[in-house]
Length: 554
Image (cartoon, rainbow, N blue to C red; front, side, top):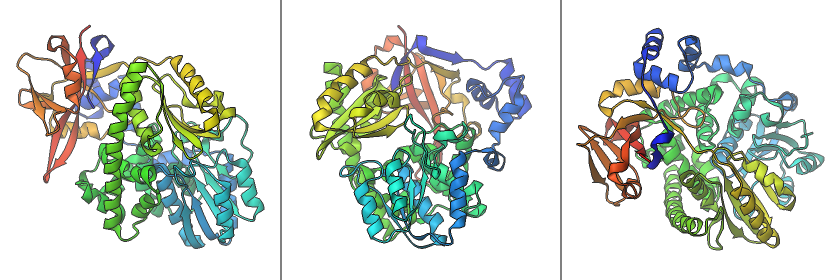
């Protein structure tokens, strides 16, 4: 999505003698050395730091990880049990939830009489453990309850489950309440894990626990890194050394031996597994998997990941739900943007909005406006909301201030959700608006390497792509080229919203660029910030240049 940036906020990096020296020492192209310098991963005096980043080793990283004291306690209980009996995996409805649910089921299969899963309905039940559901599982003959991607705050319900005779394991990554967590079997590195494991999503927490404590064979676990990669990218956790390595290996699994359900989904989306990358997962695959829990039951996404038949039919249903989600999101984005701009509001509420699509819309509005955003809508007797924060804000701290009046809440610094009774909503709405109006957001600054698209070929960019996967914590390297007099701005596609900027023989693709460029005088444009990407189109691999920012003079 194309946006604009003031020239004063752009830091242009020009490759220097130090860049050439680093390239020589690492035996890599100068552009790779420039990217490493841009990201602060190398200096002429510390070349070894970059070597570790260029060639990460899970075999080296994993044994150093510490998930917290409860991880060992949970492993002792696991190995002590002669059988798990009838297992129910209790998960969550987003991609991390369905991926960790799938992984937990596959782990339990070898030691259980039967394995089922339960994911609460987003609209009818909401996030976390629910007592009524727990009692129904007990009545149905559940012996072992494995809770994934939730459960940290449900201490009393976990104790009740154990009092009813269940073996209970919890694998989560959500921030705990301020009071100490006393449950010895809640495996959550946010409680007392090391800094690296605190960056993990729930699927990774479960996978790493199984790896560190010999729950499953190492080869078997490496074959399940596809689930870890999906969940890690979907949950937008920082791609530092460990997460980046896990995603890198997981992408290799999906490229070489994709599980049956994903293979059907890749085919339906026109993706060639061999050329699959993190951007395609984030933009195409993950939205489809998320659509199930947003508009219907998340069970469908689990069925696709497990490979349950009829596979093609399940995938078609996912794609159809995602198309519906896209249409709803577009409509709500227009409605919410209009209200936010006209009334200068951070907290937006509408009776008719379906809660399942609001998180994506809130993320988009937060990104476009660089302000905190709450979108809320009624669900039966409750008001459910989603809060998104730009850099500089903390969603968890905001909700913690009003937690005594919330029915449920949880999340991360940049994204959180909550439920409140209809009776309390008006007061909560006023307090949230007041707090969010006072949040000091950081004005984003952009750094980009000065290089024209004509100087980049597929071989050069493949060397840069090997520094990925890219995302939060390992941002996509941005490049800059000055505006020239002979450039042409041309329409692109059938919708009338996209453009391409013709720069000699190369072009920059500007998604939704019409709105941005129509609001800027051509004489004020100083240049373009873009990034290359590989695109597989009609059987051919090609290099595209995607416009990120139009740089404007004051």
